[in-house]
Amino acid sequence: MPDAKLFRSGRDFAAWIGLTGKDHGTGGKHRPGRISKQGDRVLRALFINGASAHLRQQKARGVSDPWLRDLLARRPYKVAMVAFAAKTARIIWAMLVKGEPYRDRASAPAAA
Image 1 (cartoon, rainbow, N blue to C red):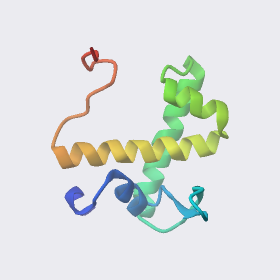
Image 2: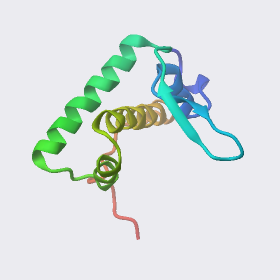
Image 3: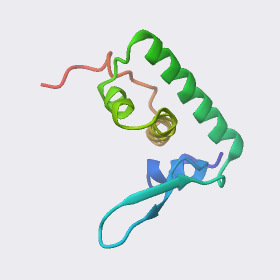
Image 4: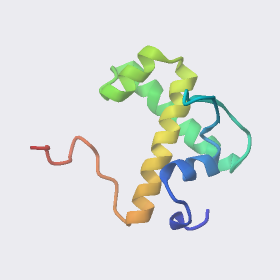
């Protein structure tokens, strides 16, 4: 994997892996397409497998993350799995660029 600072954003990093769909649309209506098989095949498979395992555990125990719960309510399981993998890739990009360790939302200080 190249240096994370070479990517402008987390979306660019996720696109490099192959986790974002090709955009379609005219006149301002955004319609993302399917993910392609371009990008890093092994890294994409690892992100998808990790997201699948996390979703399987969350569904068995009850989904605690509101974002994930809402996503699963309105999208099919595999679409939510790829969206969660892309979100994870963006988080990892931010951690690599900032040089910070992972901070779980539950252990983060409460916003005032």
